[in-house]
Length: 242
Image (cartoon, rainbow, N blue to C red; front, side, top):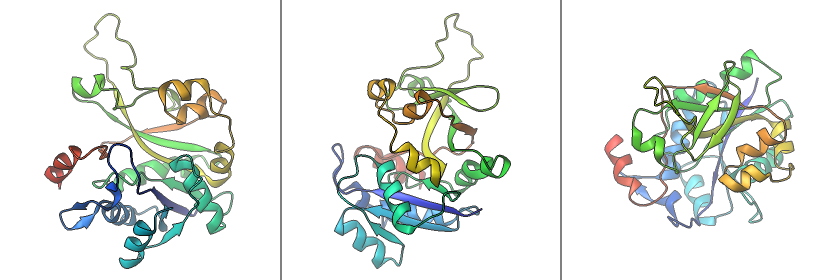
């Protein structure tokens, strides 16, 4: 089974313009993500997909694989799907969508992400979750939570604290959604054509489009968190981890 990782990366960002090329201890953020993805034992090839000449040049300068995409992509998922088309990947190829702002990404979590496809070749989509260990994250709307059934199938994703602990049960475990996805290429191309859903627009979480359209997302719990850089203040946390 062939697994290809594609890292969507754009230069513009409302909260942190140019963050893909910000220097983090001698390397750009996108370079750190690329190099971590290359360490996964399950991934055969890694590409960056971008519409930025500056990002394109930075990847070619380091000898990496990069694809120039159009500036019409509305989301990172659309950019990944376009890159997969450009590469001419087969329908049964597994495509891993890695966010370009996760510079301390652990390659082991990518192995965890794609493992379900070996167990179920008919699987359409998978993602990751990790236990939340503090009250701050469980209440933070920027930390997306996920609940799933006994088979690991996602029931719902939310910026709210879910499930609601009505009786203040001390044994409730909350799970943080890690925004890394894997799909069969056939489903990825289908996903980008699905109409935007009501829940997706309310929560601003595009994975809800999948659930609301009747498809399933397999959730694997991993011990490896992958914090993202959303604004300049997050860089200090990342540098501390490094």
